[in-house]
Image (tube, rainbow, N blue to C red):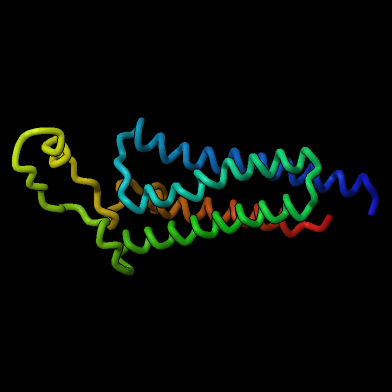
Length: 172
């Protein structure tokens, strides 16, 4: 194999890692925009689905830097594979949450709305917490083209996992 071909593969991994970092950041950024701009309060599972993106986006930036610095291929390939695994975990979380929303299976016990008020025995900060009841995981706050945000997250995670694994498994 020539040095040019190896360099081309390295550049391709750099571009893929940068694409993944931006795509992951945009995906979780969209969820944050729905929360802070759109006013959609996330449930427990919604918040959990963000974790692979919070870890994955900076990891993909690390892959891009490692690739630009010409780290050994096994390093960049391994980190891309870890990014793919994170997105598979995101896919699992999205499918699980979607299934809870469609009542295919029960959600976690800490994900139900309507918990009773906390008896604080007085006035104070805890009284303000009583007024906030987090949304239930089994009610989709929004559906776009028939899919909840959890469903769209599953699709995004699947695509990003495929991109990460394809790059990780590409030959040098």
